[in-house]
Amino acid sequence: MNKFEVVLIFNPDLATSSIKNELDNFKSKLTAQSAQVINEENWGLRELSYSINKFKKAFYRFLQIEASGQIVKELNKELNQSENLLRYLFIKVTDHQELPTKLNYEKK
Image 1 (tube, helix red, strand yellow):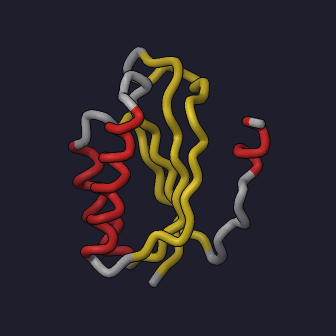
Image 2 (image 1 turned 180 degrees about the vertical axis):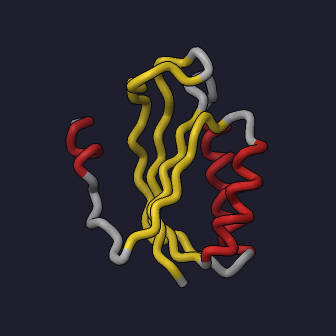
C-alpha cells in the first residue's frame, strides 16, 4: 500500500450535507477496494487563487489515505465525473504529514 495525501475542492454552493454525502461516497469507494482513510481535515470555505468555473471560493477537504496506485487510477476516472467537485489532487508521499496542517492553523 502506498501513502497518498488528497485534496478535494468542492463547489461553494453546496450544502454541508451534500459535501458530507460526497465525502462518504469517496470513503466508501476507498474502503470497498481495501484502502483506508488515515486522517481527515476540513479546511473549510477558502478563497481560490484564480476562478474555477466562475467560482472565487470553494470548500476544501484534506485526507491522508493508504491505497494502491491502481485504486487511485480508478478514483481519478470517477472523480472526473463529479459535478460537485471543482478540482482534486492526489500526491504520493513517503510519510504522512502531522495533523493539524499549517492551513488549518491559519483558519483560527
